[in-house]
Image (cartoon, rainbow over all chains, first blue to last red; front, top):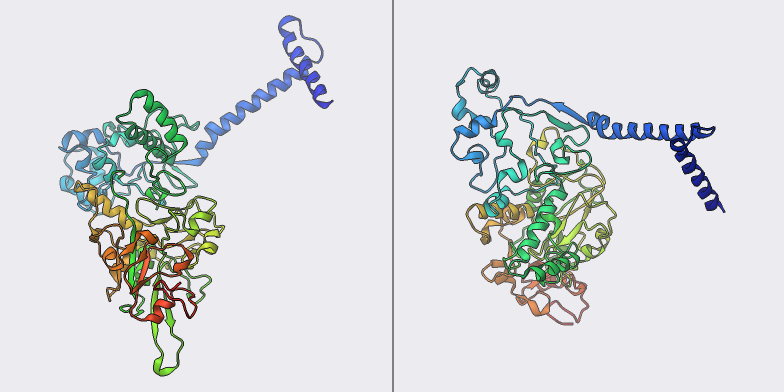
Length: 260
Length: 267
């Protein structure tokens, strides 16, 4: 009964909703019109709150201590990114350079650029480490091996970090007030749309690339049609084709590979 | 890594050499950021990934004898990796890796139901009843390669898995994929002043653990060395930590043997 009633009501609503286009407005149209109006206003307001206001509140904007010009530096060094962001002999990755490394060239200001003078007077002369804000810093529980990706898999820095080497200014660092992490981890697009491989650095993004790589290596040497069907089998029943699972519960890569 | 031969990391502890000094416990806590309490005597609250137990033969003075038994996580293989804790975890927070034979514990997945603690027959798992509190300034001495755990999750020995990953990083830098035996050693192994702990790949015939234990693949890794035994052997947990002792009462205390039974296959 109630469903029939609802249907009837819905029909009535759509009828009255259509009427204004055909006839002149009658009594009762004002009510449905205002319902629609307030619904739209509410919807737009919620979207604005969720997509604009909330991110503004969630992220605090911070400036880097020194406005760093990557493009200028990359032109002047020989080994590209690895001139400053290098691997140590034990396979660990140095990440953001320490002051001692900058001093190798910047013991004294080489130009009269205000940022360089600021760097030399405030940090080099006082021998104080620069408190750089790291855009790509991951939470505590994440283990990431640069050696495995850059040395073993021979990946480019750009794949995950984007064309940061071409930047002439340090952009604003947006820090999540709850987690204390950079907005670059979650991604700037609040709807979660990703255009480039470096737009986000979440677990899903690691997994996406690894799943692709796994199916690619697995289907090597298979005919296209065979590979197509085998890929479906591989995704649905991991380990069934290779005959070997790498762990018991997850049946593909164990979580311990990236979680510490 | 897919092309590598599967490893099975394990440990053998010589109880004749162990003096019970506790250096392994200290090294483990420092290495793995294990939180400690003001009152560590409360064993319901304290966390010890590596714990040294004292065994006694229970005889009066002239015949009395004691033995110290360090107990890390046994990293049970069970039947094809179905170790007790892995089988019961509802959150996929703990897993058995077929590549290394290490039972992982993912703190961010664990929600603290403690099924695994109930399932573990070795009491190797510990629950964080409190958030860790470090003395002022001690945060700076924490190991950056191990994440500290929060209140409400279970933790346990990982065979210093982060050391395995760091050793692999070095190998990658040198263009290798395989590790040398000495490149991956746990903190307790290196800390033991008596050299009682030996760690390595049980599948690798050149590693000392394999040579000492001589695991028998036909009988779920049971040791062929008559001096070697495992804890609670008959439960079928198939642990990867072996113990050595020349004393029979010590070997017998590894399981609940009846008078006519024994660890040497007397059942």
